[in-house]
Length: 225
Image (spheres, rainbow, N blue to C red):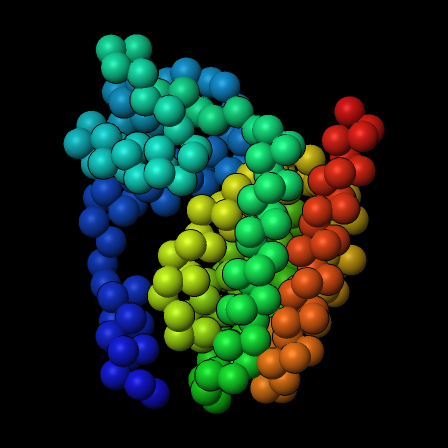
């Protein structure tokens, strides 16, 4: 394992700050639409909701502005970003190129420990889909994204992908939550199988198919609205 990779793992395993905790809680509630698109909230309301101080909530909010999930209105509060289908589709175009890069690089760089973790994620995602558990499925989707990003050894691609992946998960809850999970699970599994097999070409192709599936699903959902 490379020194840089080991250092990244050490940072990932470090205790989160209160701002990190606030960010994760707030991001999760926005993505899962517990805080609905267009809602106006205050720092104090969020601090009470998460049992945290206003300072970590403020720091988290600034990060979420960068992720395009919040807009800050001075003296009024924070508005949860609306969901624009065109923006989601444009983001998917960028995401497709980056995911292809990450998937192929992960297939090249994955070590034995990472392959085991990816296989475990594959099995857990399949089980969640079979059970029809959307939240558990999306937890594994998030884990899948993080595993591949770390394994690819390209922090620039990982950083660029993160807000796009968050946007996609939120769009999934908005447009596709009631869809059958099995096709999406199978396509994720195909990417993971290619990565663990060390087949960069197959990983890139499977990633393309997965993103195309997401794009088509959103287009169909919008057409039904």
